[in-house]
Length: 66
Image 1 (cartoon, rainbow, N blue to C red):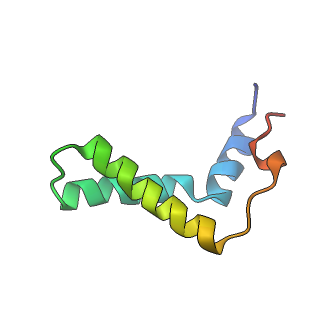
Image 2: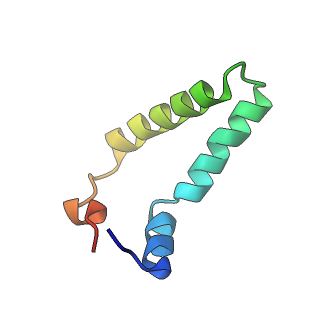
């Protein structure tokens, strides 16, 4: 699986991955989570469930390597 840097950046931007992960980390910090990894995982799962119920499913090609 080889992707050029611009394709990777476009993919991350399309799904706002960096912003969402940063929000999860910030939430762990603000809440002074006893276990930040678990807090981040819970945060992302909750957000994912919200996206699941409101957004159309991504196309299979969104996950395929070029």
